[in-house]
Length: 157
Length: 94
Image (tube, rainbow over all chains, first blue to last red; front, side, top):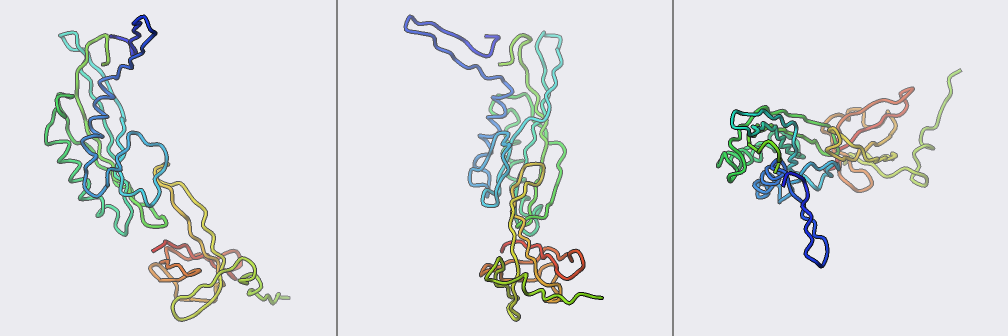
């Protein structure tokens, strides 16, 4: 199962099963864990590239920033992925409005540092704030989490 | 020779202008509201910009309240235009 798809032929036709990389499983897991986050009403998006309108805030965007591999002595790959969790808010003091959301995100991701067995560790990293003039003051608070996980040498799943 | 302009002809409600008030004084202005993308494509916003005569609401500034075409706004910033006869008031919707 080294490839990304597995084609099966059960006399009636070809069935294609899409395989998902461990990386994508982790990102999906993080998005799932963050869905009940306070104040966002389920607005948690995976790598959303479309801009968020005023009535779509607060919201959370989960996306990978970087992922690097090292081969260990056991012949497996030790991956270190940076996952960026961005909180988009609107209001007079954006960083203040984002604060309880950031707190809740932290608790949801750090309550189990294996994310349910998907990773070997997760550690919070840099936090950045951006406040912007808009039809209502807007803010983007981004927190980078460093996630470590393993795969075999010849498969990413 | 200095020109004497009647600025009101640019701000008639029979044309593009709408009613504006600060709660005390009524005037007219042209409200533009193009959408803009900010924060590195993460946020879409409306850039409310009201053009009025520079001589009205001389103390208008950050945080002032205006009602434009019946909707409430607060002022973000005020900028004079060109020769200073008009000013553009950038607004956020309440």
